[in-house]
Image (cartoon, rainbow, N blue to C red; front, side, top):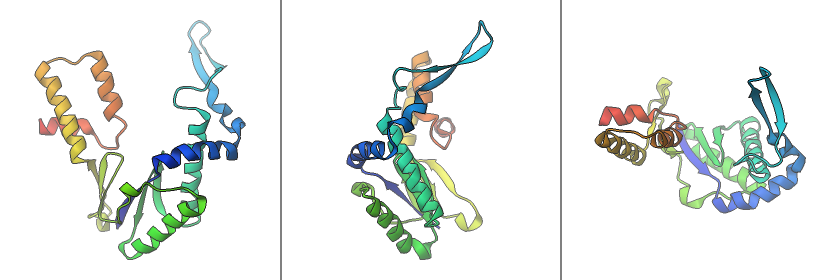
Length: 198
């Protein structure tokens, strides 16, 4: 099994926001403006419609993500691609004997839809690939195993951060919050890597 990271170009994201919003219409994003808040005095949840969309949920971003999900769905259901989508990053996996065919299918799909890929990140399919700060190792895939670990750069960054905290002997609330925000969203346990190495 081989894998490859596919990244939509940054300029494409900017260009696609307006296109996607036009395709979906402003009403498609309206549901993102509702929030539910628990009201302690009444003991019930209450629904509020915000006058503006929440941070990070502007209509163009929401529309872009819906279009990216649509591309993932077309690739998965019609082209039978084994791939994932996370924002503008796609991870594609394929048997070694089909890597050229899969590459042609993926690139043609994006080309037909008018989406450009980030050329500086386009690499051939391989047994190890990097996506979203982690390295996916498919060497053991014939055994049904896939290893996912932080990239060396990410490990170094975290170890440096943890060593600084340990040398100071304290961790402020803000530093702890930043640490959780920076590292908890990754698919592997960064803290295990850091404490095993320190």
